Image 1: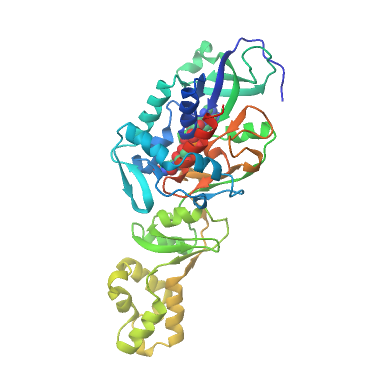
Image 2 (image 1 turned 90 degrees about the vertical axis):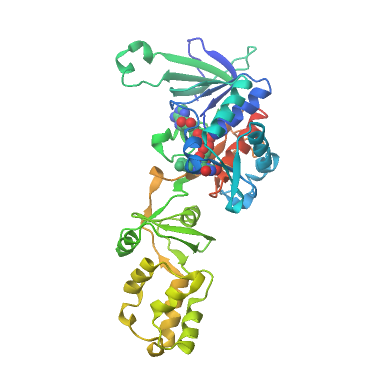
Length: 429
Ligand code: FDA
């Protein structure tokens, strides 16, 4: 660490937060309300870009049912303290205080009635009321510790520069650096997903600069892609959505599946991606409410002249979509497609039923950070205080939100983690 203080005068704040996203803004308004002088720096041209694009533009801002089990981390206990000190109703009451209209969808998910902009406006208004300053288009060039025994208690110095637009490049004055110092430095730079929205690895670099370890990062809450023959099959089915049970050896979700021109998406796949490692198979139960083997064997007895496709198409509530049924027939039982059930061996019907109740697929990968909603992995939580989010290695340094190795399920959990970790940190910085 460079302990040599630069000669240039710096502007001092009690708290500097890098990242004007969900966690950064929440931390800022919490610290600001305590009378702390807070500055938020962000290289993007707008605060809270991910909030604006979240939940299909309606921001699934939290969930009625938040439990530690809804989060993935190398240390499953880390998230407990912050989540219990800042439960979802705290955020809901702020939403209600600001008269933001919202509604509940399935599984306790809360969305804005109108627009995600309402949530961002609420946070920015709260920040303004708490005297928080936000500086956008600001690149962080360097962060270093300083020893200032004066009244400011300055521990960190940040060297920043205005982010240059195309027009600015020719103007040398715009390249000048600005120096800031602060007592507490909060890293709220989020994960790597959607680089076009301002995602960068700065948080991880800063963590490593101060001796922290990273848990491998991967795109998560992300659709699966397929390149082999399965890919062709799935592409042909693009647009079909249906309820399934998607599982692997670690977990299982009963949610809608969506066939896309790249592979498989929809809530079932996004949730499963949180638990998926490259090279693993996934299992999809296409008819989760029935045992297909039993159904086919029963029909063989009661309607021996029926064809397999007739049984599966007529199966009232649980019928497979026609296009999918045709495609599966071509792939799985083309040789017996016109054979009456009476003439098909039980073993074949049992095997076919097992396949439809447990379709094994091997994704070639995921759509990656380009479309992933979150980044799994991040700064190792064993090296951070679960009560305050302070670094175990550097006094006054804090990490909050998605940059940490805490990944929520789909359903408002990632924002709840951002608010909760931002809150507990904002209480102490
Ligand atoms: P966040 O990403 O919000 O903020 C990080 C900030 O740091 C950004 O403003 C960025 O510009 C800034 N930054 C990064 N690098 C920097 C650098 N080098 N210098 C300066 N600033 C830098 N979750 C949920 O609960 N419900 C939902 O509905 C959705 N929907 C959703 C849709 C889509 C399309 C995406 C991509 C994500 C979601 N999420 C979600 C996830 C949610 O958006 C995410 O988990 C939180 O925004 C994380 O909050 P953070 O504050 O940690 O990072």
